[in-house]
Length: 480
Image (tube, rainbow, N blue to C red; front, side, top):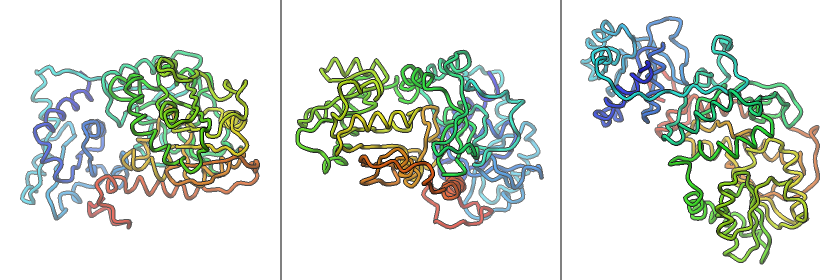
C-alpha cells in the first residue's frame, strides 16, 4: 500500500466516525509538504473542504497550495473565535502535537495522523490506487517547469484528480491512460487561437481527472481553450470509445438510462427555450443527440426530428426505438439535407468540436435561411460556477476544448457568421445566420476573463460554503 492509499484509507475510517465534528468547524492541515498534499487530496476525495495549511518553513509561509493560504503556526494557534480542527500531516509530529496540546484551552481539536498510521501499520487495509494519467505530449515530472500555472499551484500537473469516480469510471480512465500513452491518434499538436493569435497564458496543466493537459487563455481576444490538443481523428476516437464511460457515473449511464434522464430533464428545458422560434410542424436536427431522447420528445410534439452522434452504442439504441439517427458529424449529413432544418440543437456539444470553423460552416448549410441554432455550453461565468461548485478546475476536462463567457462566445460566433437573438452567461443562446465579421473585428476580453478567474479562485471556498460577502477580506482572519 503506497503513501496516498494509507492516508486515504485512514482518513476514510476516521471521517466516517467524526463527520459531524469535521463539518462543524474549519479544517486546517499542518504540513505543506508531501503528506500535507496527500492529506488535502484525500479529504477532497472524501468530500471535505479544507480551509488552510500551516507550515513552520519561512519559505512556504505566505504562499498558496491548492488555492489555500499557508500560515505560520503562530498565526493559527493565536486565532480567536470558534474552534477549528487540525490534521497534523508531518511525519515527525510528536513535537507538533505537544505544541497544539498547549493551545487546546481555546477549544481546538487535532489529529496526529502520521502517528496514528504508524501505530496501525500491522493492519492490512484494502488499497485503492491513485490515477497518475499523462496525455501523450506531457513531459516527465523532472522536466516540468517550476513555475505554477497562472491560477495557482492547485492547477499544476501533479496527476491528482479532484473528483470521485466509481469503479466503472476508474477502469475506463485506466484504459484511456493506456491509449494516451501508446497510440498515434493521441498525439497532440499546438494550434493557434480561433482569432489567429499564438500568444497564450497557461491557466492549468491538468484536468479534473488528473489528466495532463494545458488550458490556456488567449492574450489577444480572451478565449479560453485547450492547447496543445489531439487531432480531429484522435478526438473522434476518444468521443466514440471513452467519453461516455468516464463522464457519466454509475456504469457510464447505459443508453436506456441516459435516454430517459435526458428526456425527462433536458428535453423540456430545450423546448422552453425554443418555443417562441418553432414553426408549426418544423424540422429539427440535434447534433450530439446521444440515444435520441430530445429527438423523440420533439417528434411527440409533432415535429420531424433527426439526430446525429459519434457513439454507435447510443445511436443503435435510439434507432431501435424507430428514431431517425445517424452516426456521423454535421458534414457527414450534408448530402441531401442542405437547407432542410428550421432548428439545429447543440446541447453541450459545441465545446467539444475540434474543427469549429468546419462544423459551423456545415451547420449553416444544413439550416434554412430563416432558421435558428440553439446552443447550450458551460459558460465560465454561469454554468461552470453553479454546476461545478464554483471550482474552475472542476470544469476542466479532456473532452472540453473551449470555455466561453457571454462576450467571447458572441464574438466567436460572429467570426463565423452566426449572430445572437438571445444569450446569457450560462451560454444558453439562440443564433441565426448573418454576415461573417472577420478576425480583424475583435475585442480583447483577456483582462476581464483573467481577473474573474483569479477572483473566483481566491474566494472559491467561501462561495462553496455561502460565506463570501463580496469584499476582499483579510485572509488572516480565517474567513474564506
